Image 1 (cartoon, rainbow, N blue to C red):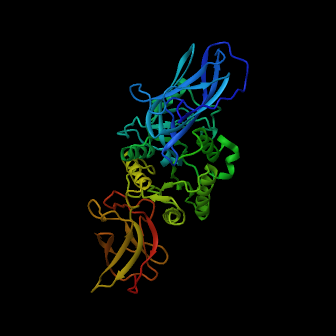
Image 2: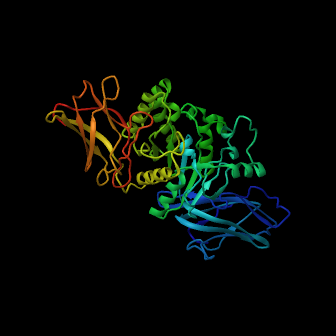
Image 3: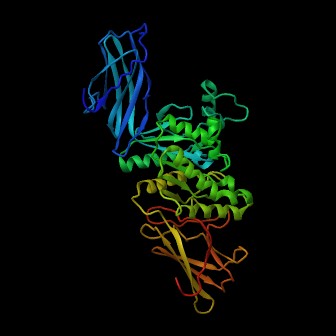
Length: 481
């Protein structure tokens, strides 16, 4: 027995079963991804039963890699066994795919195939995280990216990741459902589906490309859901609540994950809900970290994009601004922009935009780039005649600000919040933007980027990180920065 492969054997039952057979009941299933620890490896706990094994005989286990070659340190190793056994593979290195093999004298070989050790990411929020983009030119799968389906089976990840009617958690079912959709009914539903692409798979594939570390995805999002529906206080309802269902699924994959990807807020842009959004959002993040037992768990989210609907524009922009500013309040929290991305319908980010969001969140997760343009100040510079300018400075810019065609998205507003047409040219200038304006700045004037619910915004930095929408930034007129 090697020092890295430890079998703890528990004699919990003295009665032998009638057939010679090894059964693995806990610990590993085909295509499973195990969360690596701080050391970069994972400890895989196994358990099961064995029948018809003569006294003194043993179960043996090993890990093999591609081609059937034993993984170094995990060759055949003996385990004493009663009718119920347990053991642990300690220090399995990140990577794979691995095959787990169990054998005993006179019993058929047991194999668990295509195991990976890497990082697990939870996908949560509402429809733009669930993915409602057209299923055209979607992100191709990668064999190193697997998904824990909504019916609790591991498989190689492919679009669409979310299948709400098939979920084990009843919170995802339609009002008329009494059980998960299965069999021919599920296949018929799948065949009719035209939408479902999201940012989770593009994110995971991008992470694998950059790091070489396998990724496991845990889809938990549900379209149209509000912060109230994600209330952590509902966790005692288990799979009958969104938060409880998410927590159950995290426990089902081992209880630890690398981080959470979140896209939600569209359902909280009424006057009443917007007023509560900040505290609910911050409270959700705190609850996730406490219930997952990971105080600094990375939590990356998407700022609201666009919506071709005219009502509650102010509250839409206020939710965006809360999403922009919360990032600075909490550790290991990051936000990316979506306001510059094309839609596939009146509110849902399109397939190609979802790929962009995946890339942007991967930038946050890897920490190899700056976080993208975050507004700092707006400084008025009076000119001659009717011509003046406003220099808007940004932090976290990769390279320089840029735009395809005419840079757009800025607007000036009076004290009442009404737009005042003044900007006639926009010039990116490194990590700043110069707005050329005409006329007199209105009293109490403020600056916005992405005002309203359907603005045209197109400014990014050299790393493709979009400029975050912002609302009501004061314009400094005293000459002091």
